[in-house]
Image 1 (cartoon, one colour):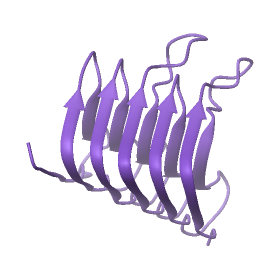
Image 2: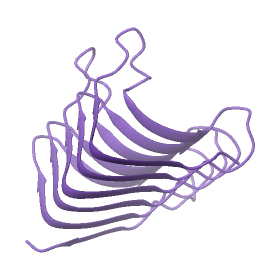
Image 3: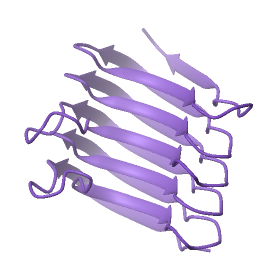
Image 4: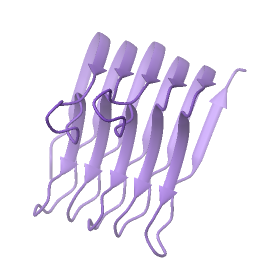
Length: 173
């Protein structure tokens, strides 16, 4: 099994992607790599502000045999997920828990607790299964939630007979 990744910081930013290979965005990730066996670690972030911009990403995933870890974000003031990569526009800024194509395992649970959650210009919060496993659930607790300009909160399954996760959003607005 992979270890957990826990980060405590006043502010966290992940901006952009590798201009030579956009499959590698800036950010934090835990995963079960191809050819590996075992569960991925959890990613736990505690901060005042989280900014994911121009393809920046926080993710847990499985590319092989094993469950992806859970992704938990506790941001006192703000979680902002904005834009897509400026290189080719294919990689959105995202908080993501997923099962990749060909993998066997379940996606982790994605939990966000914050005062303000803002998604804009294609930013995504999501769980996904493309392989042989169920999608993870999404749990959001925010005082305010704003989605604009092609942004979204999604849970999807593109695998026969596999379930997408539930989405539960609690907000004061």
